[in-house]
Image (cartoon, rainbow, N blue to C red; front, side):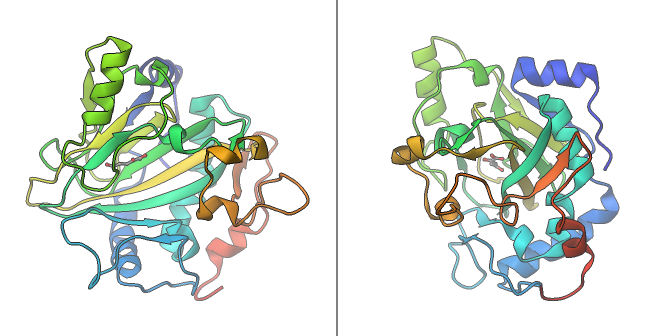
Amino acid sequence: MLFTPTDRNKLDYSEQGFLVVDEILPSKQLLQLHQAFDDVFNGTFETGVTPDEVNWQYGTGDPSLTRQVCNGWKANRSIARVVLSEALGRSVAQLAGWPGVRIMIDNLLSKPPGARSLGYHQDSAYLSWFSPSDLISCWIALDDTTRSGGTLEFVTHSHEWQQDSPSGEFHGPDDYRQPMHHAAESQGVEPQIAYVEVKAGGGSVHHGWTWHGSGANDSALPRRALVLHLMRCDAEYDPTKFEQGIGPTYSRYKHLADNQLDENYFPILWHEDGSRTKALDDYLASPGPV
Ligand SMILES: O=C(O)CCC(=O)C(=O)O
């Protein structure tokens, strides 16, 4: 993994609410990931395990929408080698100043030429069910990205704005910036938008409360991205917040007797004491179905 945060990176991340990174993955890993995306969106699951959310498949998915699958790491080991990487987990934890990091969910997003936008949102607005509720996301471009190709965009400093409730559509809204403009107006600020324009393998890291979204892909090239949403290693379920909504993906892993996040479903990628969820390295090394 090629990304080791410097003090300058840590400062930029905490001031802006995001950091653009030129190189997160080496280019030799990209071909495997392109193949993995094709497999997963075709319903071919290498491990035999179905991802937690399959929102788009060839043959049945709406061709005008961005394709999305969540927790592809359970279905495909090329995806898992990135999402469960100890080195990437360490880099992100160090950027955030956390003692360790666990994966909450991954997202495979594929926006082919002509596909519509993804609405602006704050990730943490949807995620009040765990505590500490901090969230950090690492977005990895699998193609060269451009503004006209619908790359990810952030509003600088918006992680310090009011923490709003969820609003608006994620997939293909008419005005993808509308919820953010509404928030900026309440905040009394003119939003400054930054575009993540990087080579394939580059990307960004953003804070859970940073406003972000992306426009339509008006270019002739695909725009694929692998996203890791990460929580602190010491996070637990917080049932006092469940009434604000938890959803099927996360509630199904709640233990009857305690609030621990089960490491089979929310594995610890890196901890400053040197530990990591035990089963991960065997899972990554073994071929074929689990
Ligand atoms: O790829 C995009 O345009 C949106 C990604 C996103 O919402 C995220 O990384 O949290």
